[in-house]
Image 1 (cartoon, rainbow over the protein chains, first blue to last red):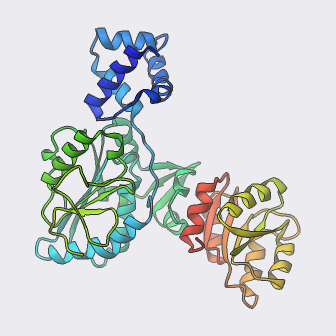
Image 2 (image 1 turned 90 degrees about the vertical axis):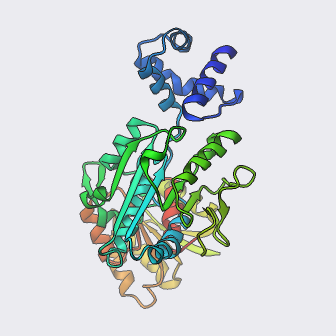
Image 3 (image 1 turned 30 degrees about the vertical axis):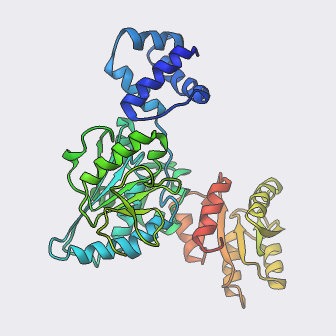
Length: 273
Length: 121
């Protein structure tokens, strides 16, 4: 790929999804964009680059953006955050919202929905304590395809074995050929919407708990700060934010502070463990 | 170091599984069928057993039932690892006392997370 084409694509991706691609990732760009070129009946990446330059076709730009987003996910990914959610975050927030009896949870950049459904499974386990409560899980992703996958809740044999205990599979999934679909009851607990984290987040409403794990790693410093501050505006003082194991707020924003003794957990200051 | 008995009639599968488990710091032994596995368990109970279902002489589910009736046989964590991938088999395995269940094909990620879930890692 020519350097000027690479630069053009990387500028486009930065604007649309915040993704930062350095020149050593040219191979990744080429391998992910070839299928897009084929889908649009183009000979190769040269033609794709020319088309993007001359004709700003929104559907094409969207395909390019989606092709470059990483959609790795698994049930109960990293396990620890989910134990923390069950044992600490949920009971604390339930105590704080005893009159309102409403909790909203956001799985930001939800990919194919495993994080949202992992949370739904935990809430289902805690159903007795949550009687009379309204707990809402909202998953969002920049990719329309991922949002559709999340809504369908259908997973391959490989996917249901990554992080999902077998008892949970038996309890919450129905087998259909070599695919497994999550139960309607759990699907009802979560809703999914196509949403760009770089866009206006206010229509999504306020969230008590935000999972935004392994998303910021793809952004540069200023973009990380912008996204974190936008997320902060959607949260109450005692809300909590989950980041991925390799992510931090330090040096990026003053809004969030690490929750004492709880790795990966951040709040605006009002959540005391 | 924890011990794991790998039970599978395929030498290739045993070799692949053994390599993954050794990387997870398990001391591994092997058995080709349920009968051999049971004999090994009588001599020395392992911490973990990775268990195939379809094997000659004695299959995995019969082995598991016999193991759980044996003195000390409730101790090992048993993880099935089989091409049987339907709900009926999974439920049968769980009610016979299996702790986890892997549907082949598997990779090191799956073995690692399943072993972690049953508290072996």
